[in-house]
Length: 75
Image 1: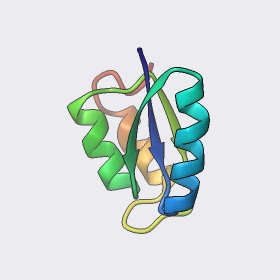
Image 2 (image 1 turned 180 degrees about the horizontal axis):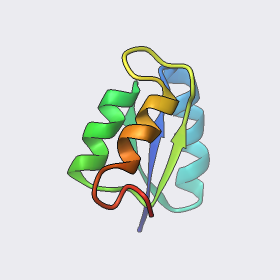
Image 3 (image 1 turned 120 degrees about the vertical axis):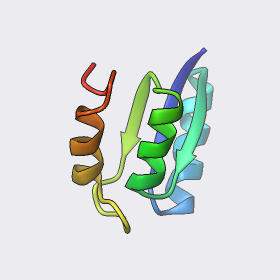
Image 4 (image 1 turned 60 degrees about the horizontal axis):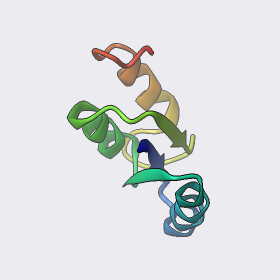
């Protein structure tokens, strides 16, 4: 099964994204900010990432910059 990391500080947006992606047979992992998302990626890299730009702690751009320098983060 394909996996998707849904990253958004809004619980409602994560819930809507989850419902849509589950109909497409994705296994969903959720994160509320960029740091939580980076930790999830370091644990297991998802097949896809749905990412919000404006989040607390670590925003979307900072997350992408950090992800790109990790092993497997540039695929």
